[in-house]
Picture 1: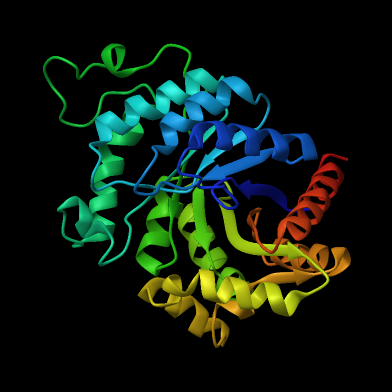
Picture 2: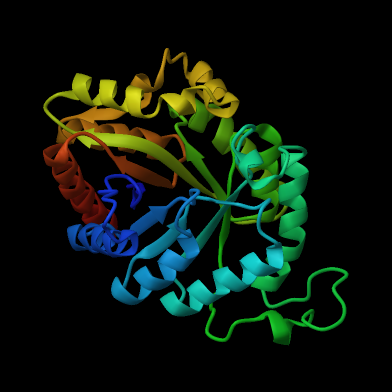
Length: 311
């Protein structure tokens, strides 16, 4: 059975007088209590995901803490290495670091143009990965460059890194240099015929282990799948306009985002998730969609499926 994780960012209350870290901790507790063993949290423009995970790690034991994803261009790789290792120490080894490059029109808010994204990520990895593995970054000299100075005590094992990758060049980079990829809104054809073959071939040619393939999808156990699909199509409309996701939807032959939603009863949802596993996905990153009753019902099923994976 495919490994299951839940996106903590979906379903937050967003009350003006609320505390987002308290909400994230409570959501993570609920996911863990249901029996799901992985949580995921993207990096937006507001709270810092790695800082939030340092807090969640101390409150919610036993779950993997997946970052999905941190955009690298605004962060120096040495700073990101220190942050990631600190969370790894706080969580006693439960962090998985996802990295990405954002999209044209979204990155510019930082005053950084969206140019050469694959090269930008490759150059970031050139510095980040050696530090995460207790090594000196290539060409580093002077104060603050030695492994003794850049390693965080207790940050073991080395933080695994995944890339947010859908394009061929980014998938090859992920396979050659990292533990795999995190996708979002990639359907079965994209996973089975595009992501898995390219990523696996790159990993094999680099002598790396079978890569992790995380499929990020909206999921609902519901009596009204049409309602849920319409809600997701409206709420996620902005994604369909981004070239990367539009290409993935076109590859599937999908008219819109409603077609990618997994929605139905327990058996239908479980079968759909199993299909992704059969195509080579190792994980599903579930965004719980629908109303509160749907989300509760979905989380119960995900806990049951996670228990089957253990057995």
